[in-house]
Amino acid sequence: MGFRGKVPSKGTEILRDRFGVAHVSAKSTEDLFYGYGWATTHSHANLLLKLYAQSRGRGAEIYGPGEVALNRWVLLNGLPERAAEWYRQQTPEFRGYLDAFAKGINDYAAKYPERLSAEARAILPVTGVDPLLHSMRVVHYTFVSSAQRVEAVARTEAGGSNAWAVGPSRTASGGTLLLGNPHLAWGDLSTYYEIHLRAPGIELDGASQVGFPCLRFVFSDYLGFNQTVNTIDAMDVYRLTVDGDFGPFGVSGVYVASDGEFPE
Image (cartoon, rainbow, N blue to C red):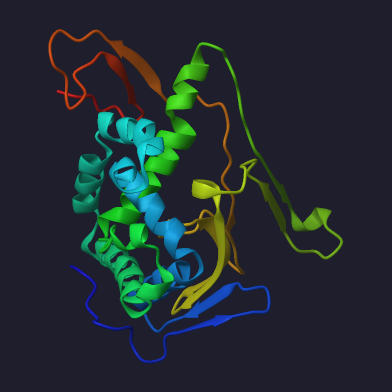
C-alpha cells in the first residue's frame, strides 16, 4: 500500500514557532508523515538529499572522490539491497507511512526547486526505501558498526552517551524528568531536527537525525524515551581472504555482520 493521497488532506498544517521548530498537525498518520517529510526538506533540503545519496552508495558519483570510502563501506555491506528487502517486510500500513514521508520530500522539492543545489536535485526522486536505508546506515553501520569502529576494535577504543530519568517522587514539580545527552558532534549525519507532531492519537515532541522518518528522542503526556550510544557487543568482525574476484571491489576486505547476515 503506497501513500493514498496526492496531497495531504484538508486540515494538515505546518506552523513554526519563533525558534524555527516545526509543529505539524494532521488528520491522519499518513498526512503526519507527509508533513514531517515536507518540514524536514524545508529546513535541510540539501543536507537531507546528500545524506540519502551517501546511504545509497552514490555519494562519490555526485559529490566527488571524498565520498569513495563511504561508498565502499555501504556497497560492500549490501545496504541498498538489504533496505529494499526490509521495506518489503514492513506492514502495508508502515510502508504507506514511509511512502508518505518520501512524497513530502518530493513535493517540496518539486514546488521549490530553486532552493535545492544541482547535486541535491540529481538525487530526486526519493522513495519510501530511502528513509529506511538512511536510518539503517546511520544506526547499524555508523553507530553500531562503522568502518572506523571496526578499526578501533583492535585499539579497544570506547565511546558512549548518557541519559537520566528522574521519577516524580524525586522532583520538586512532581513531574517526571528525562534528560538525554547523545555525545554526538553536530553536523552532517548527526544534525538533529526538532519537531512537534500531532495527529489523532498522536502527540509527540522530540528530535531525530535529519532524514529519519521517526523520532529517536521523545517526550509527551503519555510517552518518553531516549537512546544512547554505548559499548555493547553488537557486531562481529570477519576478515575475508578472497580467492578470485569478490563483489564489485575484487579485493580482500572486512565484512561486518551486525544483524547475522553474511554474503553468499
